[in-house]
Length: 250
Image (cartoon, rainbow, N blue to C red; front, top):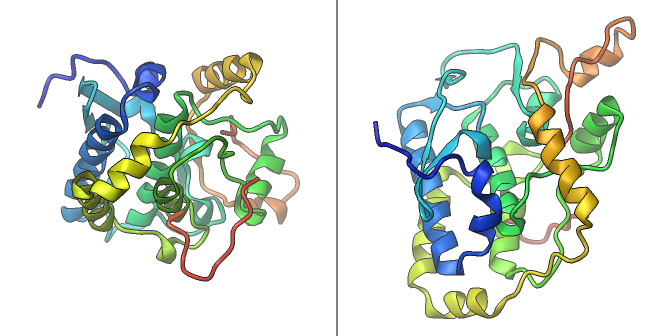
């Protein structure tokens, strides 16, 4: 096992967000390459987030904590992980798939872009789950973000898992970007402006992430609604756009 001397991605998000685009691509490529290996062994991570991605150096990372991983051939009735990273289909009662990890990777793309953990302004966790599952709530995109990056990130966030790119496809995309002068130019001239994120929002986001506990439940949202006596046990809230489709970014 490689020694990750840089600590977790979560603890280094602010530093990572200041990297040049070429270095960000190297980092993202290293993460999805690890995910590609996991999926090639017919495994699903199920708990992918910036806290269990470890940095060897600022441009190279390893996916850690495979404790919740399972074979694609296994069935799981539980929901595990941090709500912000959990596949909406899983929250709605469907089983984990490799595409569930891709959704989580899309959230990580956003965090690397803005240098902070994802967070939503909804205190009611059951309502947050409704917004994610049924109203397509996703992290807000602001600033002059390269369109290629937006499209891929939104693709990973697709509500329907079958519309998300695979880890293999994302690796191909990053390889192409790193060798395509036109795309590299588009990336290099873009400047992400994040002044609209208030300082208090950033502090709330960090505290929310720190306080978060893992979801470990056997019922989907729809099942919970069928039994109002049961409390919804969720602790926190936190696109490669198909041709011809439109998506509201809330």
